Amino acid sequence: ETGVTQTPRHLVMGMTNKKSLKCEQHLGHNAMYWYKQSAKKPLELMFVYSLEERVENNSVPSRFSPECPNSSHLFLHLHTLQPEDSALYLCASSVQGGSYEQYFGPGTRLTVT
Amino acid sequence: RKEVEQDPGPFNVPEGATVAFNCTYSNSASQSFFWYRQDCRKEPKLLMSVYSSGNEDGRFTAQLNRASQYISLLIRDSKLSDSATYLCVVRVHAGNNRKLIWGLGTSLAVNP
Image 1 (cartoon, each protein chain N blue to C red):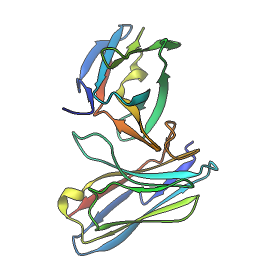
Image 2 (image 1 turned 135 degrees about the vertical axis):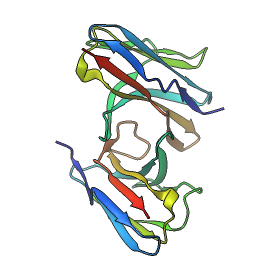
Image 3 (image 1 turned 120 degrees about the horizontal axis):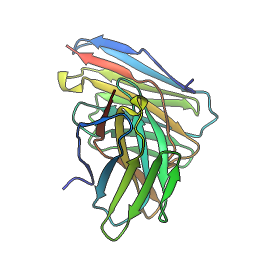
């Protein structure tokens, strides 16, 4: 049903591992986003890529590194994560940057041990 | 103070009930307002936009009060399938920068 896919759906990693999350959108959109959703916290925007801008949330630690090779693909590279990074990581896309109508992928449930 | 504030609930209501949620925002540069719905262990999905004049979509009615800086969502004749978390979202314009601010969400459980 969704035009935004994410892999893997679940990931368990140790603090010394390196892994990557992948997102792909099939909607022809021009903007893609990474969000973090933790229990009892609102959605936190991590990164935005669009034709108009690349925006980073300055509070995101450098152990999270985004990559956007083209308008349909988005990656989030993870290294030396901490247990508090365990959360649901959601990818979204929209027609243009700053658009309110964002289409989300199913998310990657990340657990850092 | 949180930029977007919602009562987390949970709201437990019987089928057929009418339920209303409020959401307050603090940034006066807020220009656009929306309600998203998130089912348990699923991604958020846009439910409806909130227009200044108020708007209705079937059993759902959204209203905006700019003077008091809050928006509301009214659900009439609740169905079991309405059980979800309802996220209030505000789009803030600051110069050329636009960003979405998300509320924590209000949890609704509709019981048979």
